[in-house]
Image 1: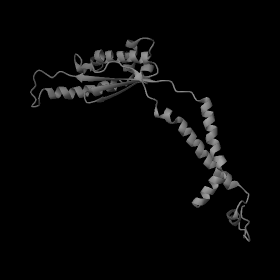
Image 2: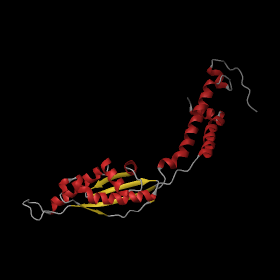
Image 3: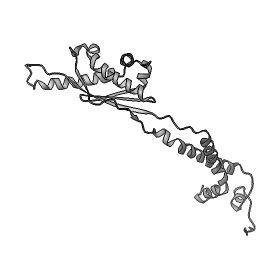
Image 4: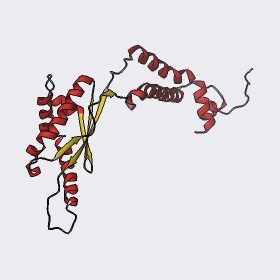
Length: 221
């Protein structure tokens, strides 16, 4: 199909192309509800492990302590993803906060000897309660979960619990444009379908397409 034929189809059935996005836009404006405001908080923790007083290793005695701290940080980050951690945080937080709510609001990560917890939710007060509880659980219970820590690793909260409004997600920002775009695409498809099944002869090309010989052509005024 030639490019000019495509333009001819779009020009001929332009009203079918714009109708679906208009309908989608009107329906969206009528039914649109602004998404609820979300909140977020980021907590970072340094993980320390005291070096042995003396060592027979050829390495600096501080090196194994640093390496151990990295292992502990990875273990604490993995522990924060479990139901046990979520339940422990819920028990400390109180305020009818459940383990399921904690698990759904918390994401953990780590980098070297730093553990990072990301809290997301719709209630800033509950997020603050969960953040404070998570700090306490990491500091007090790490030696219970990992007995190899001995008396326990030193877990220091590097951030206070600061809950801030979360920016709108990419999905929420693009929701309306995507709907309009899909409506426009539907309109283009509809225009080509109508053109394909249209039995009427409108111009010389239509007549020649069905094998008719054109003797004369009356131009448009």
